[in-house]
Length: 98
Image 1 (cartoon, rainbow, N blue to C red):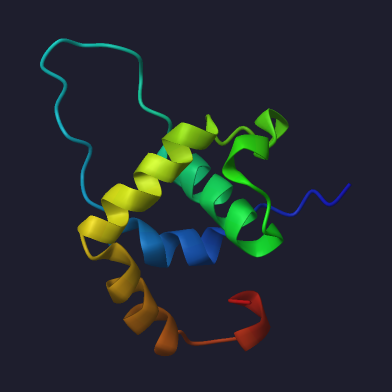
Image 2 (image 1 turned 120 degrees about the horizontal axis):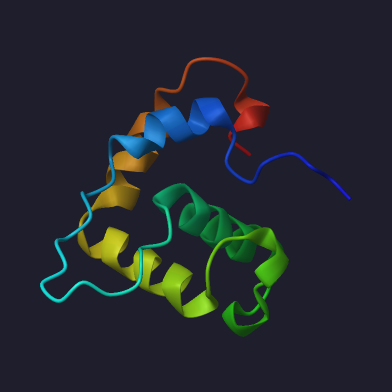
């Protein structure tokens, strides 16, 4: 099996600053799945065409619902538009973005 991370370090460094901060939890609750892990699940589903409900738990991305909600929240926050602009100006190997 391919052990290459779903979100390489250099790409994560470019994306991390575009993501909104975690909203505070008034009543505590379960710890939030890290953004990088959720992004990995989103990338997996978008690249493979896998239905959300079949997102493999072995990837360590959290649940399909978690990844889908994070995708929705980031879309509402304008993250994908800013990410697109960032990637258009990305220095380096174009194949790394693919």
